Image (cartoon, rainbow, N blue to C red; front, side, top):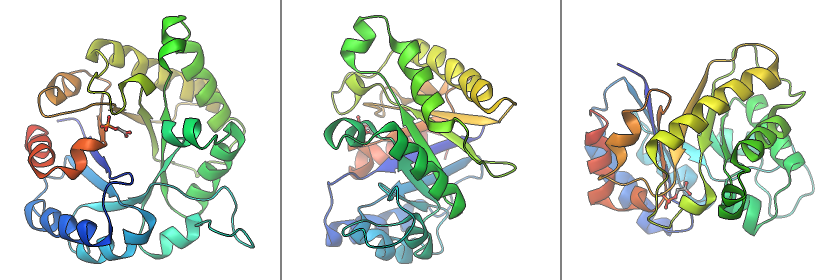
Length: 251
Ligand code: PGA
């Protein structure tokens, strides 16, 4: 059975109290998660510690939606990778399209964040994806390869890094219009080849798909060989959707 990742990106959807209550449901209903599934949820920074406490004895891990591109120091408002690690964070989303496009995160910042994440023993979930106009212009592959190249080029990686990439076509995020699973599979294969090319060696890489994943379409994604899980936004804060997704992953 292939190993699967189930990631829930809570975005800016839940306040502190709502995060706490939702985490309590996860702790209760996901306590017997089978070992072929790795699951993590990504609350907002203010709820990380509390959600971690609630999920302390649960197989569900916690991730940060954002970490700083700086390591430490006088950077008002920033939260460092090490700070996240100190409250039990084990994953971080890096390069999410909402950060790239709405907050103009640069390729260099993304690269630095990846470096800081690994240094703090946090696994980065590196998000890549093309916009609609890039896809329409036939530039999907070029954009994906460029994003992988700029994220990983000359990066000091741990000896055996857990390499996790999320393919999230920008036009599929929060639109209800998911990518065709066969096309996602094709891009996932391209991502794996690109990681090896940029790193100059074979780096075992898991690629998850994100963008309007729901209980109706998840199985068609997981049926593809190179789709090793999903990154879910809207559906990760709706109890009915989330637990359907969990059960469709074989839990
Ligand atoms: P969505 O978001 O599931 O709401 O489309 C996915 C994501 O942004 O990670």
